[in-house]
Length: 176
Ligand SMILES: [Ca+2]
Ligand SMILES: [Ca+2]
Image (cartoon, rainbow, N blue to C red):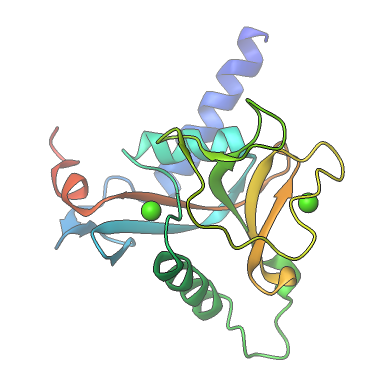
C-alpha cells in the first residue's frame, strides 16, 4: 500500500469516527447515541464503510463490529434496525438496510467466526441459501431485503455497520 493511500484511509476513518460523536460525554452506561441492551452498548452507524474500515472505526471507539451470540441479541438488533428504517412504512426501501456484522470466513473459507473474540458462531440466522460465497463473499451482514436475516457479501463494499462494546467499558472510555 502506498503511504498516500494509507493516510487517506486513516483520514476517512478519523472523519467517520468524529462524525459519530466519539467525544460525546458518557450518559448512563453507554455513550450518547449508543443503545444499551443486556450489558452491551450498540451503535447503529448511518455512515458507510467497507468491512475492514468499519471494524477500524468501531475499534477507534473502543468497540468492535457486533457479535451476535444469542437469539435474544439478534432479535434486539433486528428490532432496532426496523425502528431506524421505519420497517412498516411502504415508502421505505428495505434494500437500503444492509449492516456489517463482526464475522467473516477469511481465515478458512466456509468457516465463519466472530473475528474480535475469535469464537465460532454459536447462534446463526442465515437467510435461506446463505452463506453462498456467490462472488467471493467472506464478510457477514444483516440484510433488510433478506427479511433481516444474515448474508455473506464481498468485504470491500461500503455498508452501514453496527458497533458493540461492553456497557461497563463504555463508562470508562472518556478520560482514559
Ligand atoms: Ca454480542
Ligand atoms: Ca451471499
